[in-house]
Length: 361
Image 1: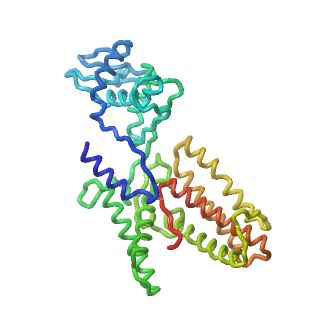
Image 2 (image 1 turned 90 degrees about the vertical axis):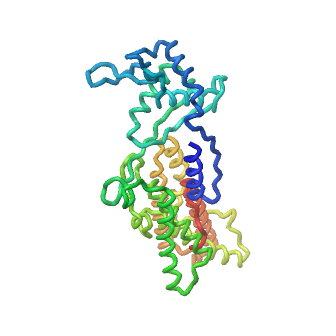
Image 3 (image 1 turned 180 degrees about the vertical axis):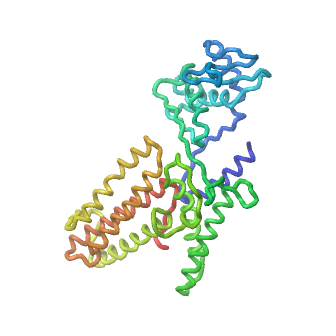
């Protein structure tokens, strides 16, 4: 457990947004061992736990075994050993316990993010927890299932040797490919591959892996492809990062020009003259609704789709509405402010997805 925790912590640190802050209370399986006997004892006292062939089970509602009878949830084996379900029930009580005066985390919403193959298991555990009154009023237990990552051949994603792909190796390869691309672009322009270029490559590579995973419906299986996730067009991290840097460049030039004239855009009044300005402004105003839906439904691809659509709206705006060369100062200030609002939205939203941004690429 300790070894797994150390490896996971290193991988998380490598993949983390540079400005992110993690508040993590780690509870390994052994943490719940002292609680298991009490869980089993309470299930027996409530009349839910029954002995069957020497083991203790809870008969499930709505589930049938192969012979057509009630299906059991095994919580203690005939030899006295406990099951994953027993640990999950103990964890539920500990996580929500402080809400009713007991010891625990005091959680009011508990999310279980695992592969979709465990959906039935958690449905059964949640059922027993509710029937045993382990859940105080207003507490929600939710399984958040995700599909499988497949290789480009549609089969299980694995190394050439047939072993499981490690996250560290996956991230390293993405950064390596991104580095080669950045290096070739710099060499074409006669520029060196320096520390800033390394930062750009790392941001693009790691961002690409995250965005590729989050931009698809989490319940669907998907084929892992470095080529697709590192593409500069389409709904990918590289496209979004370059779009952000481009908008920041436009914003900088426009603000420099206005500051040279003694104009501040901080409290600019928006003036819309073209339909694409209105469309972009309306798109930006959708963010609270998108985030509320994301919090409720837990599908990050909704935010990714929104960001890609926002970048498209900005492109349409910029193609039709000159910023620096706008007809009047009032319009220039307004359009510059719209650029600022767009870049801030992209930075905030990509940050929520755990992806850092760079003002220059």
